[in-house]
Image 1 (cartoon, rainbow, N blue to C red):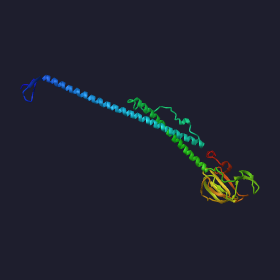
Image 2: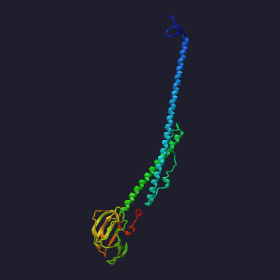
Image 3: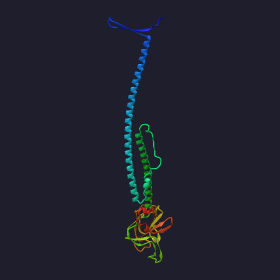
Image 4: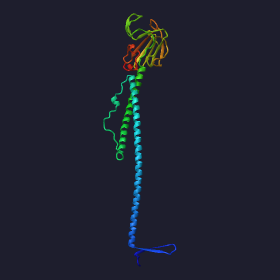
Length: 312
């Protein structure tokens, strides 16, 4: 069996009038086929490389656009945080104004400044991609931490202020601090000669004279523990207050509350009269310190401000 060592290629026209014949050795054909294969591989690599470069360029362009958008968003985020800081500053000013108005200790500016010492927060997440973007990101990170700390501090100071005001308000409402009636003071607290019996004794309250029927007011929130007739005091009301004081209203004409009633500061509880041992229409008003079981000068409680009540 013989093996052809040459390849023949015949060419002819459609009318078979002309023909051409071309021959090539098998070795040369193999070389040509190898060159063709290598050429196809090279062309394929060039085409793939061009496609990949174009794809990478598109991806890079997209990433740059995303980075630009991200940078713009971070800048907008920083502006929003600046806006929050301004609002926090306004809230701090309101708090300081309220504290000053209520005569409370203000928050130290050094505490409000949130000392900037210590190791700063730094996150290199974008460092390998975009240095500028990484810087913008970390600036926002620092600002966000500052805003978080400011919000936490403001929340704490506001909470403390609310609790303080609630406590002071409760103390003020339950501490005798207003006049019990209108009229002229006819006798003060202290030792005196009794106007009826003539002996010297401690006048345990203050006398305020006015027309019969003049309204009498509770000088603080409290509970009526007695409302009725009581010897020389005549018609008498006793009110216990959560602040630790007890107020007494004597020589009344009419009693308008009953034992066990809860009364509020400024509430009408009776009308002035001259019941009991009395030389005329007036109110005998006393303030007793329940803890010490001792009467105290009522005049020191008249027209007290809230901050003065808490210092009693």
